Length: 345
Image (cartoon, rainbow, N blue to C red; front, side, top):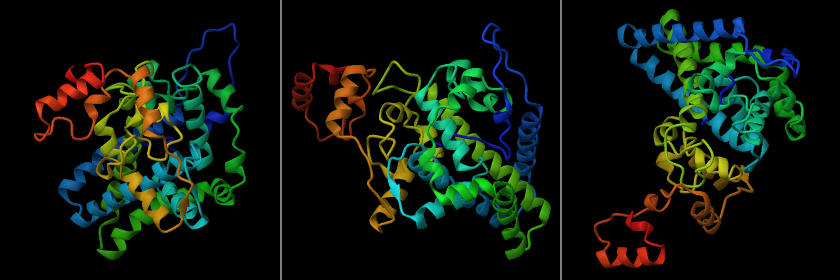
């Protein structure tokens, strides 16, 4: 998915590294912890209101905002600004920063910084949400605990000049607090109240707390579940996996084994299946109208060579058409002979 930075502030910038001679012990950041508790408790109440008193249009609006704004994370903060997997003209950049702001996951600069650190130092102490520290830490713990000193140190070494030179991102960073109030809370809550006279409490709980919390947790699962449960057709030596459930929920961000092997590919996946990678369809549409260009991808030969060298053996079993009824037994035998019998596993 989608990498979450949930919350308004950026308290991690004030964390100081401890002495190298002392073992690191994370401390609970109480303001961040209380915010997460508040958001999740509000989400539970909002979920109750969805089935008890909120109008159906209010719920539909919440899910529309949830998934449409998600492209701001996947196509924007992730594939465009963190990895520079393609280029975008200013109208698309403005649209993406608008959508990303609605998700409430801090400003783009902070999100992309931690994501670049995550890829450069993946599964080490410098990884902000190191999955080797367990599911809870990778999912949400890293947001409420003080970061490892290595994270603080490595954040300072990442080159962010490309984002600092983008005036759209500069202004989003400067105005983030009022933009959070306006776009994360104000606009989503105001629409149901104004257009179909929803009560304020229902709209607030469903379109802020419930929607915001679901958005955060979908992003959290890319950090946690997509590093733990699934197959590794491209590199069995790293923790990221191919997780279809996360891919569906996170608009195509769950093909994580591929993404960590080929992070510059704008598709973040090998196959162009729009139903399981809506973000690729989103980018392709804007490439078609000329707003996105210089889309980077990986050749099939390079993918196959890497899968054969380091994959877990599941790569060939994921081929389109494998197992179709019109493939004759002798065809399987021929393929097996060509590929060292691995198709018969």
